[in-house]
Image (cartoon, rainbow, N blue to C red; front, side, top):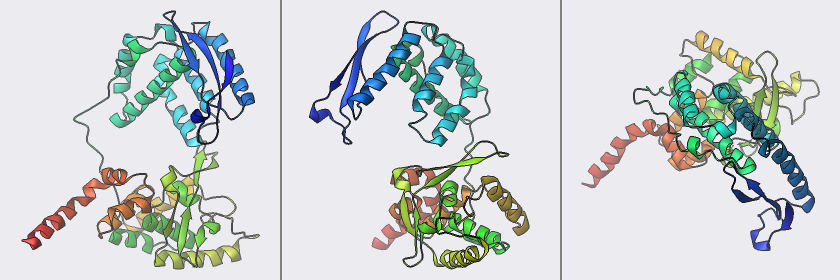
Length: 371
């Protein structure tokens, strides 16, 4: 093994320029060169090299490495590189991969895949979820090829997408403006009133709303800033929260606040200043020095639905309701996409395409007017 300073034109944008390289032997006995990703300093590259050597010693020389070993190795590597929500997704998928746990990687073959696929087919989950699990297995296998030199072509090339033509797509739930007015009309608590109005009128994700602090509300310019997200880790009985960046870069956004919400937020702010001892502007809008919990938000919503006599929808469906409100009242699709914090307009169109059907008549009417 050796470390090397890359030529300047190969440096990354954030000036990562040191790599280490070595030769690894695959199961068929062929040796191939492995070059690491780039690091900022030679010291970082040397530390990564030592870690790589230890794993090569444990696994490459010992061909008894199992799929579970590989998965745990990938998890350990990613633990300080991805968000807590991503790590939780990794953990949630363990139960769907346990059939492969004890299989030695050198023995992994098409038969194992077909047996695993047959079992996953029985699971009561959507095809899209099954494909996500399968995609993750491919990621883990690629990790095994890159880091330990395994050859998974016999397994990997057999992987095909799950597709059930009889699967009925679940329709999207949302509140019309009239339904939301009925829902919010029975809310007497100003904090919950502001929370549900923020979800409905601003289309925030639940974690984005929970992460709002009073520093994020600009009353003078009537603007709301979304720049963080709160994720709940652990069980409902003993939850703790983690502050992360929003879902994507596009999710970081500043949007105007509707007047009805702005006035209610002003009322809530005055209440918090009077009721919360030691109040500070970095306190959470929907909470105090700690954000409101998911369970409290959900349970209150459920009881409010019953009291108002409206259908039950998920908290995330308030975001869909916002999209419906904007689209059906003629908002520009590009602006809707920015308002919701989508990465691309395609995401907005693909998610809410069914809501644009009523607009097709407007297109034809435009042509008719020309005639």
